[in-house]
Image 1 (cartoon, one colour):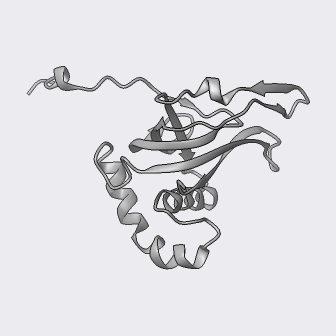
Image 2 (spheres, one colour):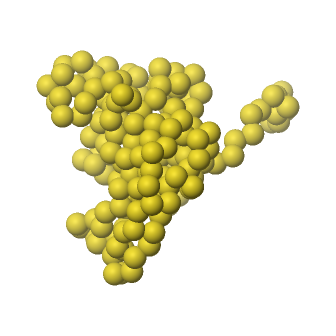
Length: 170
């Protein structure tokens, strides 16, 4: 078997782009994966298709004092691909972020911590291990989630960052 056997059946993947601040809409999961990068270590990555976009233009102030206006409605039209990545290096940040994402995808409001702890968390490791081993065919692929993307300046390093606020699709 040659290294390129089966390439004629390969789906060419065009990378999505990161959500811009001010995005508000529903996303459909197309693929989930965990990969290592030289710069960031292990990343949990989710590729989505935009299925709705209720965004309005938003102006944000950056850490250097400058302002920038984003138009997430134009940046992410319906049908476009977007990507969310979570660095797994700081587990105190990464694990709650990924758990919250999966809980929202599973239909849980993130404020319902007792129910999430009882019904979601016990199965999470197995679900995510399977999702990363089977990137295109797992329980998350095909599911939808609502996302609000918000620009923040991190408290610790004073760096610009876009945080995703996940919730179930209504």
